[in-house]
Image 1 (cartoon, rainbow, N blue to C red):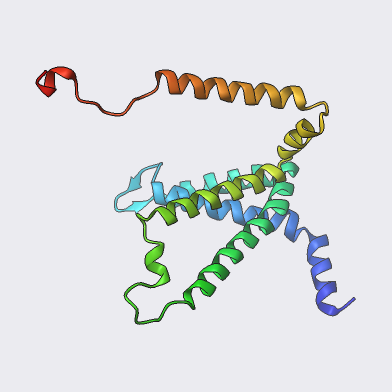
Image 2 (cartoon, one colour):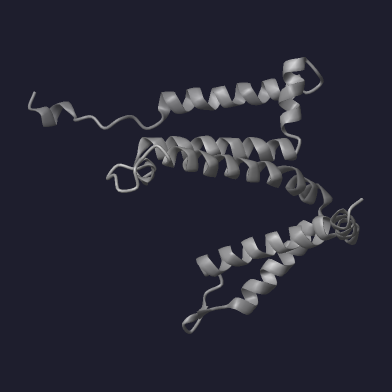
Length: 186
């Protein structure tokens, strides 16, 4: 094995991938959310960084202590990174098709209010949800359903419940705005 391979093996044995990196990831994300939302209020003009750090630290420890969550991170995050690389590659390749000085370039297609952007965000969101569902083993229930295994009763019940809720929402949910007959002058 090479020297770099030995170093990676040492770091893996040390717990870098099982403890340290998941801890740092969760701590950073929770701390950033707490700083941005200012849930615990302000001290004068500054956020309560001490309190935010302690809460983020505690949550990161709880998450790191759960082997299932850390395993899900180790399964899902490489796939999420792959989706990100695919998206960046798509943008790079599609950016080649437009001139730099053109008023209509690839970035204008991905403006905040375009349908293409909303569809792309929706598709990426569904792909990321599928990746995390697979990492937590939720997709095994669906696979078992299609194979006729023990999970078919649970999945069938969930599908039936979702269809029932959708039918009820369609029947009694909000309708489009219509003008009452009296306002039309009839």
